[in-house]
Structure formats: C-alpha cells, structure tokens
Length: 233
Image 1 (cartoon, rainbow, N blue to C red):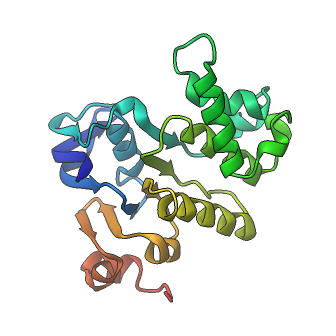
Image 2 (image 1 turned 90 degrees about the vertical axis):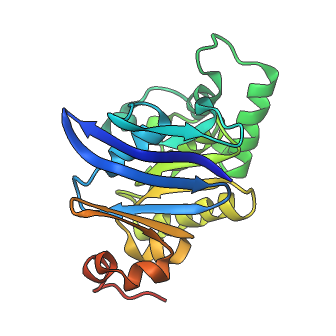
Image 3 (image 1 turned 45 degrees about the horizontal axis):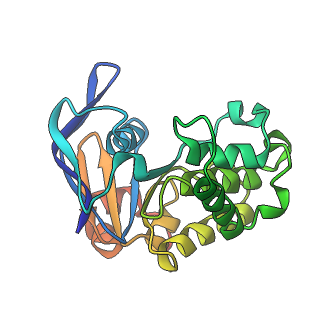
C-alpha cells in the first residue's frame, strides 16, 4: 500500500519548474533514498510530499489513512538551530503540540517515549544550544517522532556530522525502520549509505529520474555515472 503517491506531479521553485511529471509511490514500510545532483529538486520534492508546496501540475495524494499532519519531518541542519534558546524537553514536545497551547497527557507520554527510544531522556533539561551536533539531531529526530509512528521524511540528516556520529544516526534510522516499522524517505549525498540501507533509490537529475532497487540503480545509466566511482559492500 502506498502512503504517498505522486501522479505526474511537477513542482516549481522560485517560479522555475524543477521537477517534471514525477510518478512516485512511497510504499508503507519501505526505506527510500533520494539522491542526485545539487539543484535537481530533492528538497523541493520533500516539501511537496509534506504538502508545504502544491504541484503546479499533477497531484500528490495520501493513502492508508495517512494525514499530512502525521508525517514526521527532520529538515536540514542550519546554524540557526545552534542558537535556539530552549530545553531539550521544549524542543521535543514542540513536535507534539502543533497549534495547541498546552500539552496533553498523551503528548507528554509520546514525547517521553520518543526521547527514551533515542537515548536522550537523561538530557531532557539541558539547553538545546549547548548540545553537540549529534545530540541535536537526536533531539530533532525525537521531535519528528512526536508527529508520527508511520513515516519519516529526512532531509540530509547526517550533514555536517563526524563519521562516528554519522554511523550512529544511520543505525538509529535503520532501527526505527526495521524494528518499529516506520517508512523512511531520506535525502542523502552518501551513495554508500543509500546502497546499504535503501530498499529503493530515487535518483533525481536535470535529465530525468530513476526509481528502482540499489542493484537496478547500479546497472542504470544514472548509477553508472553518479555512483561508478563508489565502492559498495
């Protein structure tokens, strides 16, 4: 069953169409990696899947009873977040609150469970801006989990992290996918990680798109050009 479907969907950025007539079904329980050149529309696609922007052509639909508000989203890291004056608890619970002015008992329980799952309960009172980059990403991922137990959209979740913390983040995301059944859509520039973790790969380029398994991708023209120099286990 598809949770999100793009039917001949075209998306524009700053008045320029960057994605043309994309057909894509994000299947329940899959791990989809989105890769490709800079400027090919990867982040624009994520915004389209989230419903933050509407297609200029075609449509995006949600299946399996999924609501747009039930999609967990981890955006790209920015320097702004490093100066965010809030506690870990406040950041995580902001993912539960939505437009409500207060936290319900269910929201508090969901936030606590998300923090426990990601191993950050012990820093709940710490200032977010005092955390390491890896800890901040765990906190923001816990925030995203407050919105969903079904699907996560991750925009370059390991960008700027050192190799050890990068591996830890990949392991966490894999755990959420394999042990907790979350559907994962992840933008990445890490071809090795995409080949290791993804069930399917969506390659986006100005010349078109490819969608298929990692093995199919390596045999494709896009894969030979984009990943030809990579070594994969």
